[in-house]
Amino acid sequence: MSPETEQRDDVLSLDLGESPMPFDPEGVLGTDHDGDVLTVFTVAGGGASLVLARESAASDRPTPLDEDDLTTALRTGLAYLFCDGVRTVRVRADPDSVADALDALGGDALHRYEDVTFTAKLED
Image 1 (cartoon, helix red, strand yellow):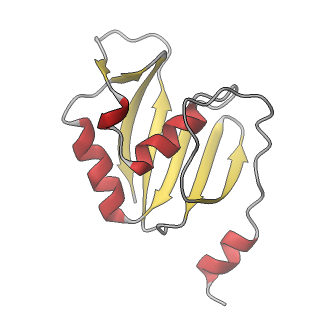
Image 2 (cartoon, one colour):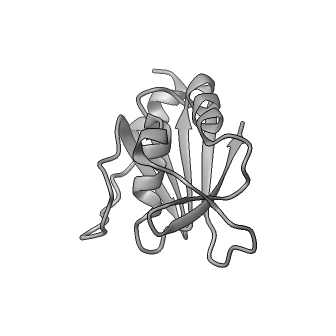
């Protein structure tokens, strides 16, 4: 069994109770919750991470997003970012999925989907 498989076997499901999500996360194998940071392990693999961080007071005007703008990795991360107590979501996915998600966001630093304002970045 590879270390990656062993890690996934140890991942516990996160009980989010009645947290409102705008859509269902896709391709999730499990999660790891540490304080206000949630790591999401996906079927797509884990060569990179798409990191979404909630911003509370935006000094710049965020770019509004429509559901049509969202890739699978973005939808999954945003779904969890809507949950109470979660400020940062790290979606572990293949590097191409992360690059596609960032391309879909364009070059803007700050984004907004419904009432959540956030930043997005790549983490290796």
